Amino acid sequence: MSDRQKGLKEALAEYFPYSEHRFCVRHLYNNFKTKHKGKALKDSLWKAATSTYVREFQVALSEMESLSSKAFLWLSDIDPKFWSKSHFSTRSKCDMLLNNLCESFNKCILQDRTRPIITMMEGIRTKIIQRIAKKKDEADNWTGLLCPKIQKKLDAATEMSNRCWPTHAGGNIYQVTCGPHSQYGVNLEEHTCSCRKWDLTGIPCPHAISVILMRDERPESYVNSCYKIETQQAIYSHMIHPVKRRFSGTAKETAATTSASTQQVPQVQQPPAIHVVRWMVDNQESSTNQGTSSEAISTQK
Ligand SMILES: [Zn+2]
Image 1 (spheres, rainbow, N blue to C red):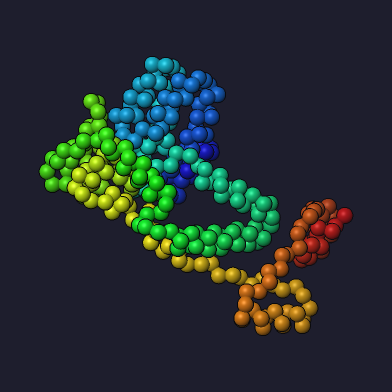
Image 2 (image 1 turned 180 degrees about the vertical axis):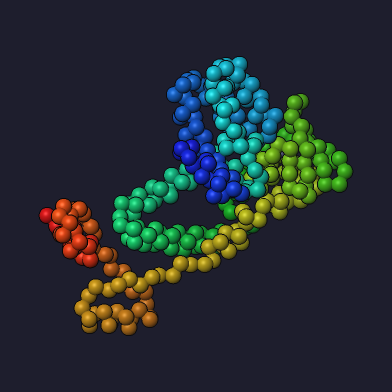
């Protein structure tokens, strides 16, 4: 997921040829609205982005074309496989359109990013230690089969399934009708629906749930295993062990700490911060100071 940074599309295609690359639609819209303004155009762009199957996507684009041919041409120039759910691969079981995930990670490491490389890596490592422990504790306290947020989504879809009417077509194939202009095909064995929501997310759509309930089965048992509590527990079952750093106390204190470290987690000593780094003007001074510590360089005037 990227913000369409220049060159990134080509670089990812070259170095990660089997990975799917998506553009953040909020960022895409921010570029779009500099030339094409108005709520109707905004709505049709988001409708095209959130469409889960190709026909729905084409209808949204046609609406945009009728509003503004220039806006339509601008958007048509970008391959929908980067920004519309209707063209996303169903392999990842993720239908995300926004890069909130990257933004959150970026915010989390904001302070560490300003630090020297080793201190930065140590900061990130410590945050990951905390996160793994927190996530494991959370998952251990959950009850039921699915993670709570997924259960909530499934409950909402189950509520919506009241409006769907399934018809058995043979084997594991069903036709589901939801109103006069809405009809889909569900394959229970392959976990697919022609609306593609189940395929994209791994969570049964209302059409599939109507079939599952008609068969007197539980929708939970048709959710992809990646959303199960036991999977979450397995993901966070490992830990990153604490790492001991160089102790900068006296020889006696160092010996005491080394001895204690076999029984308990050692105290972590932060390295000295670099306040100012000045480049040496004089070549001789520069070569003389190349072997000095960062602290010594920081005190140069
Ligand atoms: Zn469906």
